[in-house]
Image: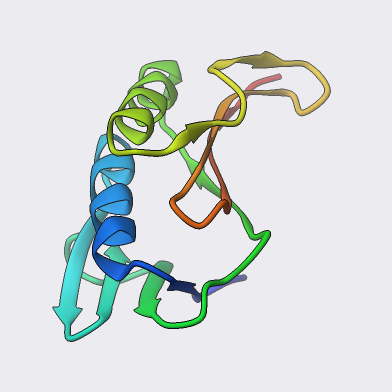
Length: 119
């Protein structure tokens, strides 16, 4: 499926801080960093990843990250808002998606979701 995705951020430092805080409750960490680039994924760097770069911002992206349980979704949402994200849908069961999920806008307005599929 998808190996990695890349986003460009208008304020790299603000976006890096947002993603570091918001994704930590989901077990996603910054495993590589260089000048104006940060890679998020598993600590060992294997598997799918998100590349964050400085530059002309990516607009209108919707990224969903898998949570292991509802607690992870709730923690993602709280961390995202505490890190400067904007509410775009609080944690809750959404039968139309067959999921428990929450949504926050990153510093550039991209829709970032934590989701746990339910039946």
